[in-house]
Structure formats: C-alpha cells, structure tokens
Image (cartoon, rainbow, N blue to C red; front, top):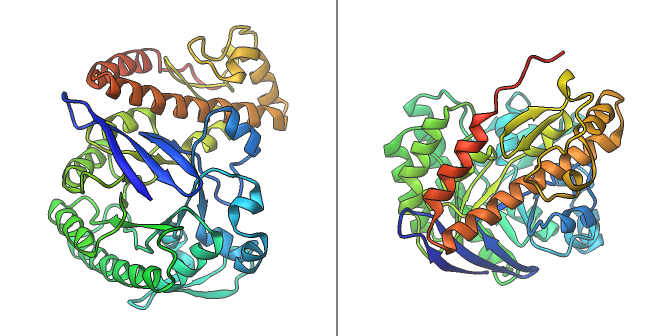
Length: 379
C-alpha cells in the first residue's frame, strides 16, 4: 500500500490524496459503501461501478460465520467470490463484538461468542481475526479491537483501550508472520471513548506499534455530534501525515464535512443504505422521507441538483409509489441514490480541497442542506 497526500487546503486541515492498493487506486477523501455479507444490499457490482464506488467494505465477523473461510479460500477470496475487482476493506468484527454483546464474553485472550445465526460457540482472538481477513483477501484489514458503549466510565474506557493496544500488537505480529504485507495492509484503531487523555494515549500507543494506516474507532455509538467532533480533533492531527486516516462508522453528510475539515480521509457507514430501505433519502436541501403523503403526486425529480441515474430518470411520485407498494425496486433505487449522493459529496470535497476552497464549500453545502430539512409529519 502507498498513500500520497496530493494537496492540503491551507485554510484548514482538509487534505486530498491517492491511496494505491493491489486492486487499484482510491482518491481521498472517500466514502466506502458497506457490503457486510459480500454484497451492498440490493446493488450489483455493476451498480456500484455506475455510481463511482472506488472501494467497499466487507465484514470479517459475518463472512467468517457465513459462508465461512473455507469457501472464501476456495473462491480465491472475496474479490472473486463477489466479482468486485476494486479494493476491499474488511472490518475485523470488533464492532460486532460490541453490538452483539449479549452473545459474547471478552477476555484478554479474545472474545468467546455465540453465533447469532445458529447459536454455535466460537473464539475470536486477534490472531484469528487476522487469519480470517487473510482468507477473505481484503486489500486493507483492520486490527481486532474492543469498542466501548456510550456512556462509559473513564476506568471502563481505559481498560478497553489498553486491551485494544495489546490486541493491536498481536495483530501486527500475526500479520508479519503470515508474510502478506505486500498484498494486504493492516490498520491500527484508536480507541478511548470520549476521554481526551485516553484518546491521546491510544494515538501514541498505536503509532508506536506502527501501521500502514490508522483508524479512529469507537464513535457513532451514542455520543453527541459535538463529542464525535472533539474526538476527531484530539486524534486526527496527531496521526502521521503520510498515512491514511479512517473514521469508522460515520455517515451523515454533515459529519463527513466536519471530519474532512480536520484531516480525515476515509469513511464508511451503513446509514445511507439503511435509511434508503426505510424511505429516508438525502438531497442537497436536506433529508426527506419518501413515505410522506406530499410526495404521492410530486412529479419532480428526487433532487434537481443530483446527477445519479435515479434523479435523472424517476419522479418522487414514482419512488413514493414503489415504497408504498412494497416493491423491491423502490429500495434498490433509494439505495442507488443515497450512495451516489455520499460518493458525489466526497468527490466534491476533494475538488474543493484541490482548489483550496474547502471551508467555503462546507459553508455553502450546509447552508443549503439544512435550510429545507424539516419534513412534514408522516401520514
């Protein structure tokens, strides 16, 4: 892996770069669609290429349980299994340990957990998490970490953060011993909840171990937007200038802008696809819910300023009908639009950085995005 900063906006911390990976180059800042189970829900790889996706996510926890590492290896890895020829990043499963906490037991050795599919018991250690991701064949693998809930006490967050550092050392050792460093890169993850001293300690400790890239984890777990922005301010400027910076699980457009302004390069979130399945759609004038009665006979485009295939072809009335009728096409079109919106936003952020006008772009986007974002009541 190679990362090169092409441009820094002199007016803030925003930066544009090129991330070179075995399956292609990625222009940053970048939003990465989430394909948890070897698919971005409702979309084909052709759809993803059409809307300009450069890199997608898979999830080691889910792929380990189904279809399993043996099938991943027989297929030649996730790229060949799903026929996606561009880069892939895999989440190690640490967040699933957090979100499915009623099914697991965390120790220093690793996590014993019960499958949410069939109840079978499994043990996931840092070493096993690396082995699973090697079987998947992702261009970028993530260290196995523990994510604390919010709120958490300082002691709880400190214990979790320091265990994450111990696990990161074990992940790196396993990565090096497997001798796949040229094919699959490993990112360390900064934890520490919303406590500045713990975040600073975690940044220093993770850098000391040394990784090709760094992620800020443990956000989007219940903290406020202001707290999330504080965490980014504490962490991002302290991470190495010549390494990519990844903010995990953050997806609202306004949050992306805040993080990009502070020097973050990479983002992912299930929110755009999850919202799409529930009728929640992004527009340049704020969020709307296609379930609302006002769209039944609205024959304008979903978003006049959007160039996606959905906005160029279909009306709000048609999208409203598809959703109300329970047609699968409605969910697919909603998903296409929301992901295009996020990818296009990242691309426009990059352009603004290259032209040294990111703060101006951010102000203009948010002024429009928030102006008409209040929706009428659901019918």
